[in-house]
Image (cartoon, rainbow, N blue to C red):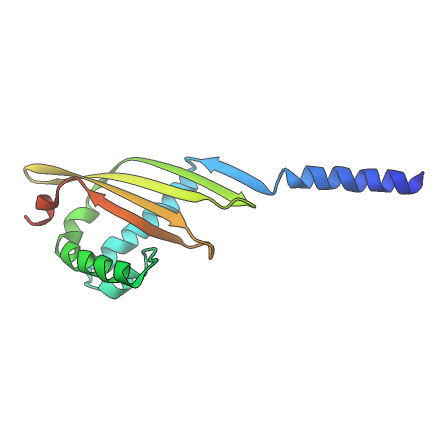
Length: 147
C-alpha cells in the first residue's frame, strides 16, 4: 500500500513537471529586445566595415551562402548608418523553450532616406546553440540602397 502511494506521488510529480518541459511565448518584450540587439550589432559592424564579423551574425547553411551574404554585406555597408536610424515599425516573436525549441523573431523597420521610404524585414532564428542568428534580410527597394 505504501509503495502504491509513493508511486502515485512520483507519477503526479512527473505529470506536473512535464507541463513545464515546453513553454511557448508569443511577442514577449525580452525576445524582441534580444532580436533588436542582433540587428543593432549587424549595423554597428557594418558601419565599422567589419564585414567578416557581421557575417557571423547570419545562419549560414552552405559555403555558397557565405559568399553571397558576404557580397550583400559589402554592398550594404556604405548605407549602414542610414539603415541603423530606421524605426521599428512592427515585430513578432514566437519562442518555445523546452522539448520543442522553435524560436522565430521577425522585425520590420521603416527607414527614411530623404525622398523615399524603405521597408526592411528581418527574420531571425535561435539555433541549437541558443544563439540568435539572422536568416533573412529583405528590403522593399534595392534602388534605395544605391542612393
